[in-house]
Image (cartoon, rainbow over all chains, first blue to last red; front, top):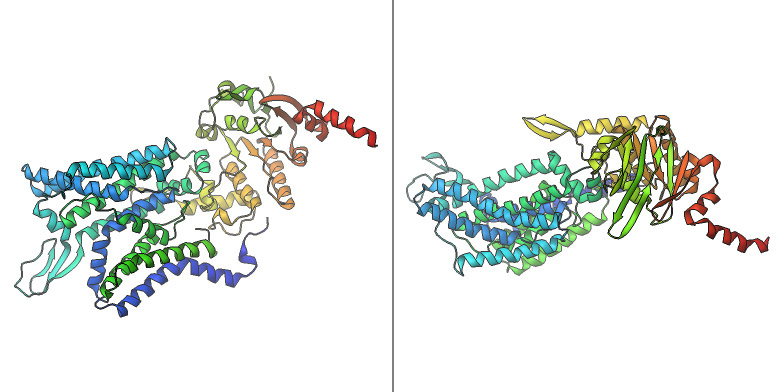
Length: 356
Length: 259
C-alpha cells in the first residue's frame, strides 16, 4: 500500500506547520499574558491569577460541560439557565435546611447533594430528547433553556434567592490555605490577626473544587472506555453503533453530565455571591462555548481535550482581567474574543495537523 | 442439506408497507465467496443488515454452522463471528488504527484500582494483525483520516480478522479505490478464503465478482431471482438477471440490424 499524506512531498514545511497548529494556543496564551503584564497596571502579580480563577470558576465548569457534549457532535444551550436554576434551588434548599435547625455543614452538604440531583434532571431530558427521540441538540437544549428559566422565575418570583447560612459565604469566598507572619499557616479558616497585618490567601476554595472536578473529567475523557466511546460517537456515530457501543446511553450520560456540571457551577455561584439568580449563568454560555472552540474542538464532534479547553478558558479569562485592569471599555472584550475565536477555527481548519 | 457455514432461510424484512427482503434464502460455505448482486433498491444492503444484526428479520431464520442463531443486535452478530465491512467502512476517522480495531471492545488495564484504556497493548495487537496480512501503515499513532482508501479497507479487514470472524460480509469493498489498491483488496479476500472464512460480497463491479467469487446470487425488488456458479455464467447473463432478461433481449434485437 502506498504511504499516505503530505509527508512525502515537503517534509520540513509540513512538519513545521503541523507543529504550529498544535502549539499555537499555548504560545498565544503565553504571549497574551506577557502583553498584559506590561500593558496593565498590577497584572503581573500572583494574586491576579487567583482573581482570574476565582471569577472564572463558572466558565471553567460550563466549558467542561460543553466539551463533552460538543465532542459527541452536539451542543448544550441550556447550561447557563441550569446554572441559574441550581443557584436558586441550592440557596433555597440550604437556607431551608439550616433554618430548620440542621448544623450549617450538614445543611450545606445535604442541600448541595439534593441540588445536584435536581440539576441533572434537565440534562436527562436533553439526553432523552437527543438520543431516543432524535431531536436535534440545538432544539432540545434550547427548549430546556426556556423551561429552566421559567421554573427559576416561578420559584423566586422576581426577587433574588437568599437565606444562606454564614458558613456558605465563608466557604465561597474563602481559601484553602492562609498564612500570616506570626500566626503561621491556617487551613480553611482565616487566622485572627492584628489590624494591618497582611494575610496571604492561597487558592480559593471554589477553585480547588473546580480543579478537582476538572482533573477527574480529564481522566474520564482521555483514559477510560467511556471517554473513548464519547469520541467514537462524535467521530462516526454509525461506526460506533455497529461496533456495539451503546450510543444512546452514552449520549444520555453526556447530557446529564453537562447539566450536573452546570448545577455544580450554580452551587459555586451561590456560595460566591451568597444568592441565587435566574440569569446567573446567562452571560457565560457563549464564553464557555467559545473556550471549547478556541481550544480546538471541532463543531462537528470527534475532537477536543480537557487541557486545551482549559487553555481556551484561560485565554478568555486573561483577556477579560487584562482589559479591565487596563481600563478598556468592556465591549472591546467581546470583539476580541470574537476575533480570537475566528482565528482559532481558521487555524484548526487550514493548517495540517495530525488529524486530532 | 448443504454444508453451509452461514445461510438465511426465507428471511423477510419489511419497512412499513415496503417489503425490502422477500423470503430470501442464500448460503455461503467456509472457504467460499458468495457475491450478491442487484440494482439499487434490490434489497442487498437490507439483507446484509439482517445478517449483521442491524435489522432483526420479520420472518425467516439465520443459520450458522448448522444451527439457527438469534441475531437481534450488532453485538449478537459480532459475538457469533459475523463481521461486516460497510461501504462507509464504519471506522472512526478521529481515532487511530488501534482504537478502531478495538472499537466497542476496548482493552483495559488496571491502574490504582481503576479500569483504564490500554492503548499500548491495543497498538501492539494492531501491529501484529497488520503484519500478518502484510499491510503497510506508516504510523499507527496517526488517525484514520490520514490514511488512503485502500489502507482504510485494510484496517477494516484487519479488524475482522483480529476478532476471528467466521463470516465476513463486505459491502462494495473496492468502490472508490485505485486499481493497485483494488488488486490488493482482492488478494486479501483470496487470503481470507484460504483461511477458511466464508465471504459474502456485495458488489456492482463485475470484475471483482468474477475475480474472487465462487457463486453469485442476484436480487431484484427484494426477491432472489437467480443463483449461479461463477464459472458457469457470464457477465451478460448476470446483467440480464439484474435488470430482467426481457430488457436485455430487446436491446440485442434493436442492435442487430447494424452488424
